[in-house]
Amino acid sequence: MLQIKLVSLLVNDQAKALAFYTSKLGFVKKTEIDLGGGGLKWISIASPGQDDNGVQISLEPSTHFDFVTTYQKEIYQNNIPATAFAVDDIEQEYELLKGKGVEFRSEPSTMPDGTKLAILDDTVGNWIQIYQIQSKTEDTSGD
Image (tube, rainbow, N blue to C red):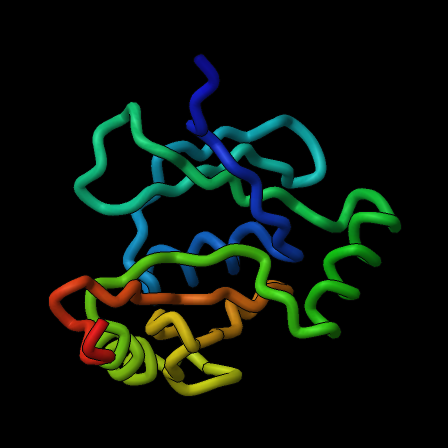
């Protein structure tokens, strides 16, 4: 059976990305290995409290190949989030992150299905979506 254990996120500065994702968003560093040359490292992060078998994000440098740099810039310029993270309370998380200096492209808004989302700038070339799925007990539509 296939399992998701590692996903890559393109970043234009690994050190800056590691600092942002750990100090601002609260993820924890799982791996940081020097790949010998040019300052390249294998860096992975994960949600706090997650065991070693959980999903990790590899902070992949986007600056080694022109086509990768172009791809990341196009995604960003077209306002497409690179990934999304679930939160329990989007309004609370939004205020907490804004208080830490995180810049948002959008305030929390509600989609037709009740999902609430906001988009933040990760400072290393990506828009990141945070979202809260409406629980069945929150449904006020009368269905």
